[in-house]
Image (cartoon, rainbow, N blue to C red; front, side, top):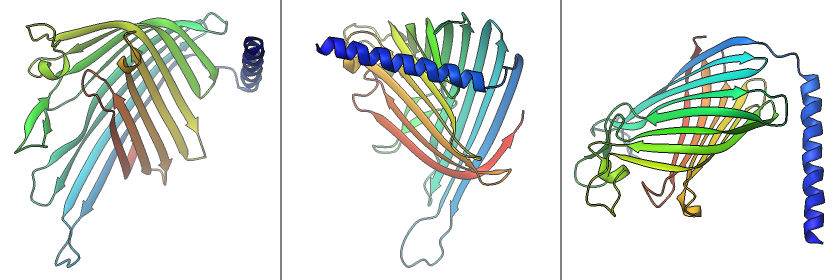
Length: 287
């Protein structure tokens, strides 16, 4: 009895979802074909100076630069989406040396074949690393723990994609993931069960990627990307990367951005990692 009710409810939800998607497609204007390009850069600054401030505190200075680019070739029977993201920032407190606060390089290329049905097959490649050396300051002094392509993450996947609404698209498929490292392979790629220090860790599994790009107001946009990778060895072996950005334009050049990023990879750390940033700065569209 429960299975019948569940099947009926699931069928009803899918039917309603399809109906809404078809209605939304009818209301939208005809798609534009060919290349569309977009490139946006932002620079955020924060500074505090104290002089004879009896309540206590420290002088601080922080900056972060972000660059996002998108190149999309949309055709009647296919779509080729290419995205790149560069982020780098540093902060300084009092007389301490400046420390890196964010460092990220990400590129992604997705090719979709349009079949004119509910789902479309895709092929995708993705790479992620950083620009400069990263340090751990938890002990005495500082200890280097990462560098350019040390580690580096690469993912290739094949599967099917689904876009129920214009602001949301998701895909699921089989995937290969490689983690490469050199000086810091003991932290990222080493297999403790073997006597050697491996430079590459390869995993076979399944991947799910969901993208959201929703305009919440005339000058406010919410974007999110949820990436899940499983090597099919257990629920705790699912790698999670959830990146959220809420951006509001105050004026033509000034914007306010709130970024929340959650990262979990049991091969790197048994606990989830979180980075949260609130920024006010300059924004400029190159394309």
